[in-house]
Length: 157
Image (cartoon, rainbow, N blue to C red; front, side, top):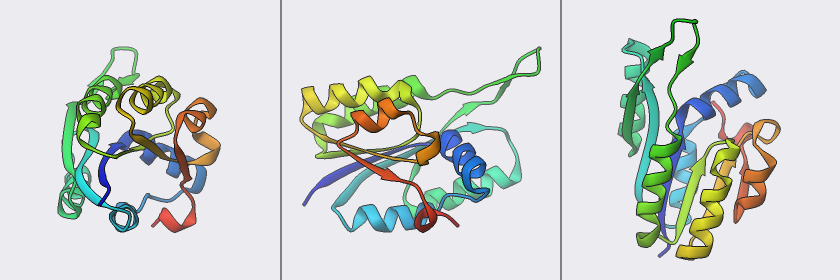
């Protein structure tokens, strides 16, 4: 049975599905779809901690589905902009998992991950699948993926 690890860039998926469809992503449906293809040996969702009740409910729902949650504090800059980036953390975790799985599934449209996917395919001989909103996923990430799954109606609430 194929061993699968899932990595979710929560902020990216939240904002891209909201921008493109004005809807939310259906994590339960994703879990069902991926688990039909093999054994999910790990699933991690990377999010920003804002300390609000809605966010806590969302995180609890993800944990109930089977995701581990990793949080970083929300940082508000003096100029009003915000910071909360998990790219390095996701990269480290994917590289660490690549030895133990057959497939890495990344939910993100961020082109910064293209070199990571090229590396794990070449060095670890794993399949690198990407789920992202078509109009908001970097072409370089789509090209780097072994399989690209467009996020569309069937994966939205």
